[in-house]
Image (cartoon, rainbow, N blue to C red; front, side, top):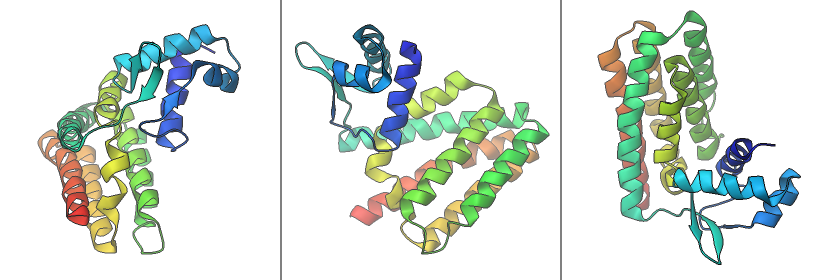
Length: 210
């Protein structure tokens, strides 16, 4: 297994809450988990440090980045701006297959609008929609920048933005509007709405903890 794949798998584990911000990542434990030597693990941790996902300290090893409150706000604002660009590019580069996949993910989101679904389920589905739009944009590096920029922030604000059916319905309307803009290749509207879905989710989360 390559260092790049190990780094990707570690990020996936963080996203699924197998690891959480503030946790120590020990080389030998990771080597045992992925059945590799410590060399590729050490290189993977350097990759993650370059992406600001972990922090390396001499004699202490790697710790998953934990954002401060003001850093969370900055991260979400920056990620929103980048995702607006992703939506704009998706308008220009999408295929009919891409728009069908986006529509499918949004249809699945609609089933999670009722009170019986958890906020985290709804939030996770919005991330899946975002990745489908990222695939349509044909810019893996830009999408990785979005995910790296907001890294850690979802654990603080993500699900809190979808704690009621009203908030979920509003989010659903925004995602459907993005889908329409991408289908119609309206890049200006798609860019605006891409920023808006981030801003609205953050505003709702801040109200929830106020």
